[in-house]
Length: 431
Image: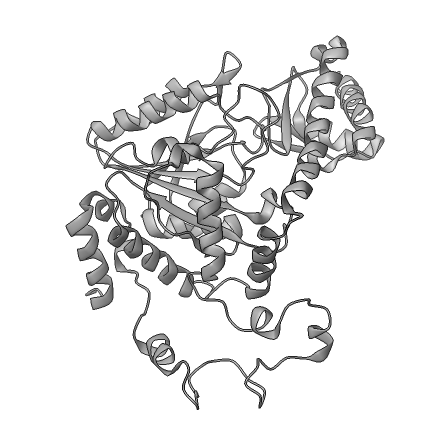
């Protein structure tokens, strides 16, 4: 099928300015475009006219969005902020604020040109759109063997990609060499790699030295002639609780590393700002030699994929978050919640250190950040232990990937001792 001329124009922009990115795109990614003409284009041309009968919403006679009073009374936003459609690209001011925040929170990005973030319906949707843009059926996507279970639905079931895994930990640190080996296997071509720090389920973030090694590995893979797309799942960004751990995103180290290495930052308000139901996420691109034209082409393709998928994210959530980010109370309130989670993580470490007998039953995997930590059972079956915890100890945990995941983020500080004692007693009952 012939490509739409608008898609061809975007592809030509990439071919002229950054041809490696064009090779990274899937068939869908090459074919997609944001429809600047058609209905959206005609609506844009009619904006500001005395009579505008183009837009697909209902208006009151005074020109404000039509709404129900019982809904409006629950929202402390103007009707224009809450009720109309948001653009498929996302709220323009929110995109600007989030981009500025990336620079503020990631000094490795200083002086590097990055794209304007495109707003998604949170991170799951962002990951889905990245699979749409860069993954063809049967393409491999590399990640550690301890990974978020929803990746299987996202990548394998929805898009036909094949998840390949490498060993996660070695010597209480991230197994970068295992990542290197799997990415250098096979003939040269496209390499999709997913990096998730803090990691779900383990709650591990790499050290600065490990982040440097990951960058060096991906550059080596690119130097070998591969087109590398690094999807950086930063869902739990900023929640680092120990000294000596990377507090920035690996995005900064990859953003200007190589012409054949595209860094894709996938992040959002969901976990960072404790608004899980608001569904506000972002996709941001960076590549060595990336220009404004290149990034605008990628943003247009991404917005086109969103337009054809969910049309746009919720305007009310975007408006609320924009106000939050400009609130004078925002920073102090973020610090307060961070300290709550940090105290729980430190309490878990204290519990494990003060109960050497627990080592007979399970071993804690390395953790230093995020919402979770994991234990590997010495001999018991995780699913059996999970059921015992439910039935006899009124305690819920997640059994997955051969480990048990504990969400200290959701466990009150004063119940953490009981949680781990229950876990120990449940393991003993399997003996």
